[in-house]
Image (cartoon, rainbow, N blue to C red; front, side, top):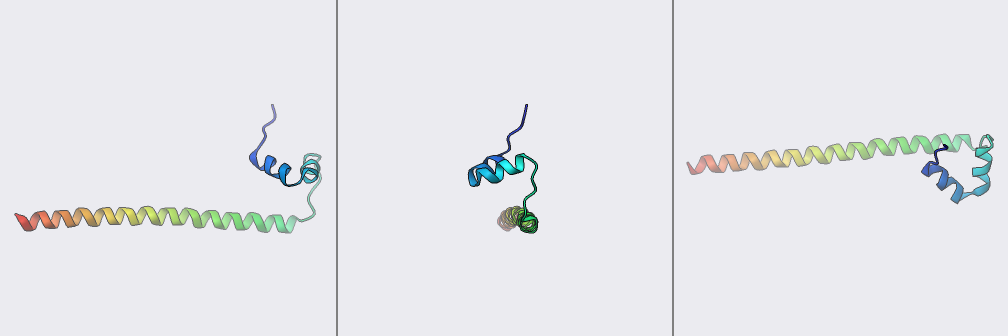
Length: 78
C-alpha cells in the first residue's frame, strides 16, 4: 500500500508535470531554492514554538500573580 502525503497532493495541484517528474525520480533543478525554503520553514517553526511557550509562560505568571493577590488580600482581611 502506498502512502499519499498531503505535500504530494499540494505538489500535484500546483504542477502536474513537476509531480510526475518527481515520481519518476528526476531531481528538481532549483535545489538551492528548495533548501532555502526548507530552512525558512524550519526557522518559522522554531519561532512559532517559542511564541507558544512564551504565551504559556505569560499565562502561568498571570495566574501566579492572581493567586498571590488573593492570598495578600485574604491576609489583610484577617
